[in-house]
Image (cartoon, rainbow, N blue to C red; front, side):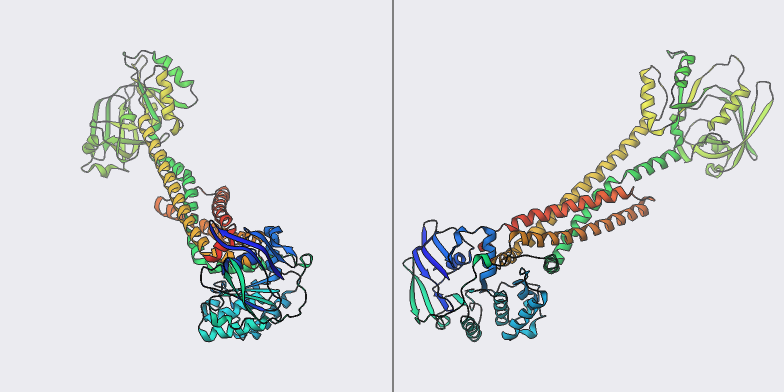
Amino acid sequence: MITLRNLGKSFKEIVIYKNVNYTFKKSKLTCFLGPSGSGKTTLLNLLAGFDTNYDGDIEYSGINLKSLSSEELCNYRFNNIGFVFQNYNLFSGYTVLENVLIGINLNDNITEDEKMRRALELLSSLKIKDKKDHKVDTLSGGQRQRVAIARALINKPDIILADEPTGALDDETSFEIMKILKEISKEKTVIVITHDVKVAKLADEIIELENDNIKIKKTDGKEFSVESEKDKKNWIKPKLNNKCAKKISFINFKSHFFKFLMAGILIAFGSASFISALSLKNINNKAIKDFKEKNFYYNSCQIPVDEGIEKNPEDIFDILESNEQINNIYYQYDLENITLENNDKSYTIDYKTPTAIPNESLVYGTMPKENKKEIAIGMNLAKRLSDNPKDILGKMISLKYLDKSGKTNEISLKVIGLTNSIYQDFVLSSNVEKEIYDNYVKNGAKRKAIYFEIKDFEKIPEISEELMSKGIDALTKSYDVKSFQNSFVRLIKLFTSLAYIILTLGVSISSIMLYKISIERYREIGIFKAIGYSKKNIKWIMLKESLYFSGISTFLSVIFTFTISVIYKYKFGYSLDLNYISFIVLIIVNSVLTLGITNLINFKLVNIEIVKALRS
């Protein structure tokens, strides 16, 4: 039995026990009577092995509790102690039967059928079998305490520790519960902590704390013969099998499902936003592609070759030809007497200099493409060819000129764009312009400019700077391309920053929610530890809960990512650049966050002291 030898316990300078020697009798109901703060619960914590910080010794069947490790103390409680608490300490969200089975789940030496038989037999003897499938939250106080007693008895312990078992009950129910404990004490040692004198009347022995020591106030003097307590070497080693761990973790997860779901949604949305931001490459590439297709003429460049330039035109031409990023190079010349006709309207341009395309801006339509027969004309010129300039778009007009032999040449061209040129000017497809120069320009004609195109849109600023470094000042759209690229870089940075912010907020709020759940679970962890679950057992249960949480959050993150992609598709016309790597990264990010946060919180939760946990 449990024996106290020279027991001493203090809280800082306050002495609770000093040199206490006392042995709890076998198969008796012993009541420790006293007011609140008199050290009753302190003694229960010492007997249960919750608190090992004391002087002297506490022995159970010759085993010094002080010599036991944390895991061995769990074994000690599981094999030898049953607990009945004032506030019941049942698992909220569990049924009556599930609460009772919690007390025997760690016994892997008996079958599940035997565990069930014991549980139902106890519930029947306690007249509560009809409530076996009811949630304990729906029961009355007396019914809950009967469930607690059944849980305490199911593993057949030698000792029942009852801490104010009637404290939350009315007189009639209190008497019924004490009668049950009295009956149990015929076969087991029952130690009741109470402040109620009426409750103590049923005790075989009443003890009180007096002058820092235990004094016997009442005893019947009888000894009861019972079987000897279980020897340490015969203790069943608590073992939580995978099936039980899954069942317990799933019930726990269901009990806190809404909060887990809210936390999971926040992390999932943060993860999805983060991955979506990383996948904006497709939007960037698509936008650049669309811009390039619409503004392909940005690749068109020109170098004037007036007498004022420092380099020889032939040298410039050679430099351009040697650059693999440049093609379609040719000289441009002045043209005279060019006539444009649109049905019954025509206009003759007496003198036309090469148009500097990089300096032109479109009002409507687009610029002529290479290898087409297209033309873009200035708004000023369009007004001379049509009553409504916009009406000329898409129509075929004629361009006439005299070749070098004096013969009139005519080309039919499609008007595809209107520019903002204030002159009577136009822009032709480069192949058409070269054809005119071939037919028109005489030997020795004065070259006015060199036309060339930069192949790669993104390379325009780089090639422009390269030419500038060689002393060639070319007219290009370098500034516009740079501005365009910088805008998209800034946009991506903005989206990425927002994604990080959303992710950080989601993780922060989720962490707070999960921490709040953990605080609410302090008592739950305390109960597990009190009935013999080791840290390893509890960690295993919580790991499974974390996996459920991570699985739901990861699934939601995939749904959110697809949803964001659909929104982008609807808004911009194209979806995110998502592939299997994107989803692998998404799963990794979400898993690391969910498992990382929960394991960090669970680590603190599992390591909480039993006494502190049970008081929460």
